Length: 323
Image (cartoon, rainbow, N blue to C red; front, side, top):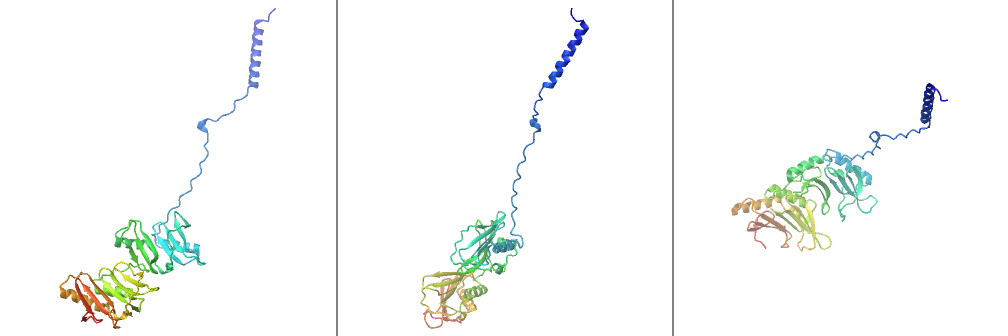
């Protein structure tokens, strides 16, 4: 005998409910996988900041950093100092002796660097002897004189035979501008004037009591020759735009020395002016004079060439017959 219809319906409902409950209790939940759009990227490391270059044309900055580099090295025996818009460099002799070392501030840091400077007993100097308080002003002055601002570089170094000079150069190269230690530009001498003759001779004879020859050339400047070491002759020369240079040559002069204070620059100019006037020459005619005691009389004479005119005078400028 079968179950009544309503009981069969109830039993089916109970079985169905039990099956659903069992299914819910045995199901394993799927693991959570974050959506790619919601994933978090790993942070990238921050880049190292690039040092900001210093502007060494600012007043006081180049001088301060040069002295800081010297303090790092521990020596004031400077062989070379160099300043550009964004770098400073010094080469020094260590106090304890040894080869020169070079330190520089470049690319945002101070460091020892290699240098192409060849040391051959150049003169050393003290930075305090040079006015570096405003390199920008020196660069502007040099630009007015040379006509260029291209890659300006200030140098202080033995320029010639132990004579230290401060200069500003450019690249591409233009005229080198020389400065005196106080930052004033080197005076340009005009050897077609009395003042130019006097100043030029004063500079080449400043450290001399006697010489063997002395001269002035309107194109190449004032000069003196005297005996050097080891059978050499030394020439000091001051051109119009370059300070006194010292050149040694393998030659022995047989001329007797004479006192430099015997020669009066005013007399030289008087004779040159007289010859130009009498010969009707142009004021800028090339001229030259050589002073020496080639006659061995104990008193030098002045040997002039002005244009094509040759004249010999005594120390007072009186014309004499050349011997």
